[in-house]
Length: 205
Image 1 (cartoon, one colour):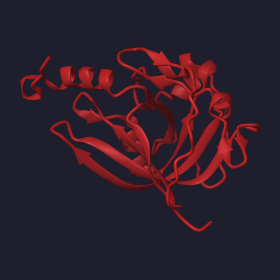
Image 2 (cartoon, rainbow, N blue to C red):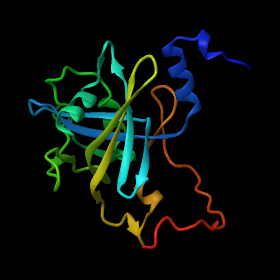
Image 3 (cartoon, rainbow, N blue to C red):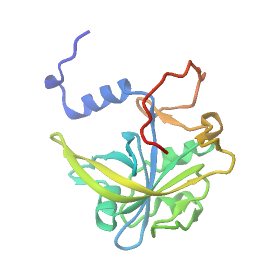
Image 4 (tube, rainbow, N blue to C red):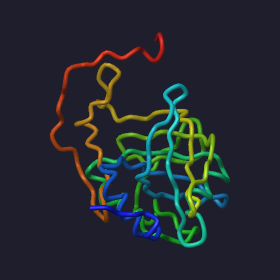
């Protein structure tokens, strides 16, 4: 089967790519508006781009002709929190993707509890097993739709007790959820451990 992307509109290409690039980790992001409204939204175009300093990237698209509230908030305040949600939070993650007016807080609407962060003003979600306090560092725009790739530096990690063993996160204990095509999510299946392959150390520490 051959598909020529020049013959497809943006929506059809989006459906195709989100069905191909799977599973995708989900960045569950809290951000504050300039008026102090706490926004919450999930983004599955998400990865890390640097380990020292630790930096994460999320791609934020538009809702109609305007950018999503998360993009506005991050560029206005330069602070936000990226959470990793586990299976018990799957419904809340999905429900937080509903578009609300900027004056509506998804956190309050969903009845989620928060905790103060240590280095930034944006609160973090108390139920999430991982929360990463971020400061904005760079924004790049791509494509005709001008999706924004927002890069931020992690200034503090918060992990649930028991998740880290010998400096490594226990993936099964984290129980992260992932996004696949359409309104569908995935959990971890079988984890296969292979032989360790030598790699040159990234640093001396």
